Length: 126
Image (cartoon, rainbow, N blue to C red):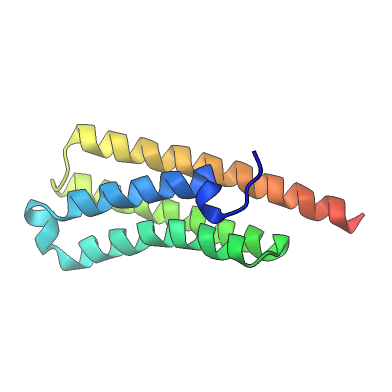
């Protein structure tokens, strides 16, 4: 399958699902009233999918690689904030584990995509 749009990327699709889940959990209970943490985790999840899209649309392997790095970093931010959300009781163990695993999976996908882009960059150099 040829990737023609950022929407075709599995990484972007999974980031979109993660972002939806983050918005769902941050709309409930005490989480919805903790504006600081709520907004930070939302921005970080949106950043993952936005950086994948922005990098892809640059049509430049080097820039795409850079934006994949930023997206992967934002995925780590989401995961870190999930720990805070769990520790303060905004989410239960089951939801925390689900979302943490989603982040870990997405981070691995981004890492593999980044490696693929890097390999293409190295091939072009030779």
